[in-house]
Length: 313
Image (cartoon, rainbow, N blue to C red; front, side):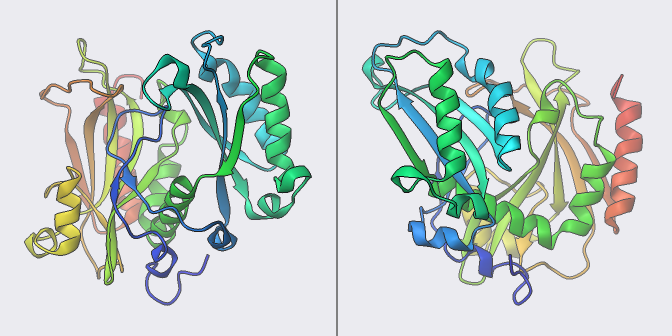
């Protein structure tokens, strides 16, 4: 992935239209929608997100399919050089029972994406489908296998921001490795692009820590946002206005491309609902914030204080 010429914006040029979308089995948070590129554009992606989808109009599968298939899909994908992402097992094509479907998402490296078998499908994807067929009822025969342009775009954008800000993000991920809990450790850190113009792009970076220990009534995550606090000129710009449209507001750390000059880095621990539609109450003591000029120093401060603030962290 070439980020050398313009601070990372080149890798994002094919993914410029912003809207809203749902990526499925994750804690509820806003999702930017990236335009689906033509399949030929996948040649520039280090990873391609493939979607394995099957219809269940008779609803013959019991609830909990995502949980029942997660371990075997994770293990099999790993042996194939792929990374299992998640399964959506609660949706319908048209809102009716007859439209019920299930979809598994797997990140496939470019080499495996290019290694095709029967029907011009990647061998790894066929192998994963064969496994799913072996554990699903025989009545499920209507399959659709295809690369997901939106999620592939997210993978590219995520990688671009993480590469450009590696000196800030990587120390935090290493410092908190093994400390995240309650299922948060299974969620990949997110660098989500919300806005893009001809002059650049803007994103937020989120690292799930644990369930909110101060929240006895409403289920919520404690999430660490990392970036810098942009000034009024950013929030008044087209990029800032796009960010506002998705609920990202002044006071929340952001990442931008091109990367700015020397800034004060900020890490802010806040709450997010665990399930879509959950209400997050304004709880005293939940939001914590750290600042530093250096990424490693920021990581050290966050790790030290979280251990003191959160019992068992």
